Length: 76
Image (tube, rainbow, N blue to C red; front, side, top):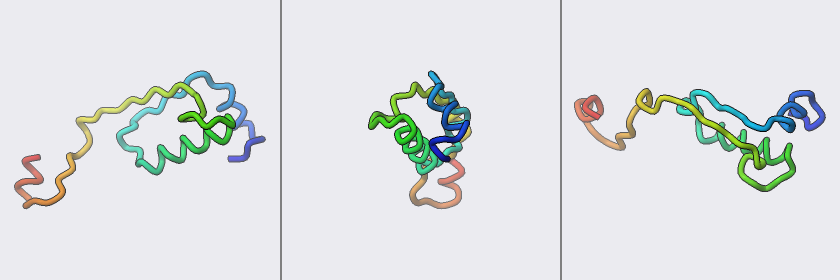
């Protein structure tokens, strides 16, 4: 996104940013959002100093099972 784009202006003017279904976002995706907002706001604070509200149902995410049989994974 270019810093002169209309979308960048909207993000600069935003007081609050809501991220829905955060549980489906990868850590790289969240880092990308953080980096973008830091660059647009020209601040080294997390998310460029913007207030971020995240929402998601963590019960819908699968548990991390490093090793195990199929039965152990299903039981988790």
